[in-house]
Image 1: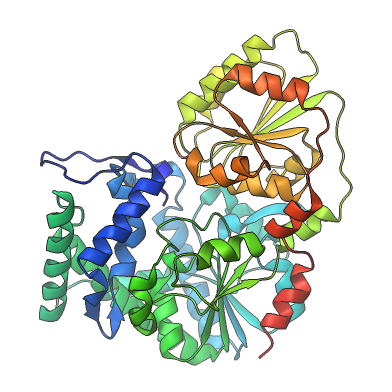
Image 2: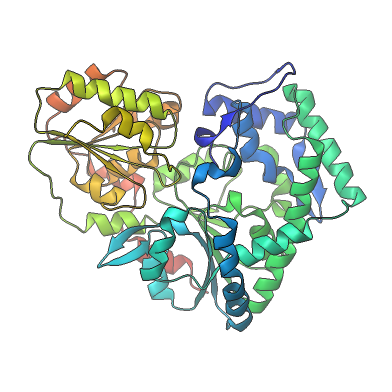
Length: 483
């Protein structure tokens, strides 16, 4: 869950701390955790504050997760069909050097007719000795499993179900005490029940129970490495792995300048008791510098590059006639973005070889907002998140790319495609690209048209591309993962 897809908070109490931008929320989180020493609260030898940190930032922005996942979640009946298969797969699994945790939505490209996990498949084909667990996070991507390049060995359905059942029943006294103190500390800072005591109790209890379940799985598999793409959403698995002496490696999957990663030197004394990765494989030196700048991350960031970028760099660009603007959505500011694009096309109604391709974010399910505004313009192509062409195929062929605060801005630069940052809420997260001259900035449809008509075939500096995405990712990753 991200701040962009959350819903407004309704609270009658006076709010003393609130943020209007992601960066302000991140600054508030760091100030609050330091002032209140939030890492002091422990259960079973683990600091529990990291479990709540990312969502605290979301709620400081005045939002909470939408109920039910807005129609994109895999339904209970679909999950239950996986339970027996999960039991059999885990029970019969041979030892594996590498345990991998991924997401169904990671399988977002097709290569040679097969659905590819963009973070792991090229690597897993080389490693060979692995066991992959997959979260069924988005039903739109489930069909891709039928012709997956590398099928998952099990889903997380069984493990999640066992954790949910184990977290029911009486709450231990120590858990109640820690939950009450943590909830009270947050309330005293922000002026409302950002996390009610009962919610904190259940989350802590589920974390504790889930980590024990993952320990049992790891005892069965006996891996040397746990590979995953979002450690901040896998606290139980990370804690279990670290307790068993398994090296936890996180693969960068997006921007890394928010509450998921922005720990400061305050947290350093607690490092051994925090469910955080041992290594973070980042795309380039730019990202390593970002992680290290606040003093917490030291040797953990390892520059390896991007398997996905390397693949698309190896393919020839195929620019069509005219001008193609690829817009990648993020599940935020949908109506404003749709109106903005509509106004841009109205201003350019005489530009017949202008083509706009809008690709939905993998977490966004409702395309109707864009269809209602843009669907009648023949120059517009709307591409659902699970449909072809893939985002990178589009970026590679685009004349220009446009978004608000997406990792796609950096990826476009890495592929040599000029990118435009639309100045809507959240765009401050990618302001460094604009400041360094690696991206254009647009406040209005007039700005976008000026850029498209005057920039021409601008080339991206090779040094910038290399700093963002180092080459030879597969070789670099294998070197880092040698047992």
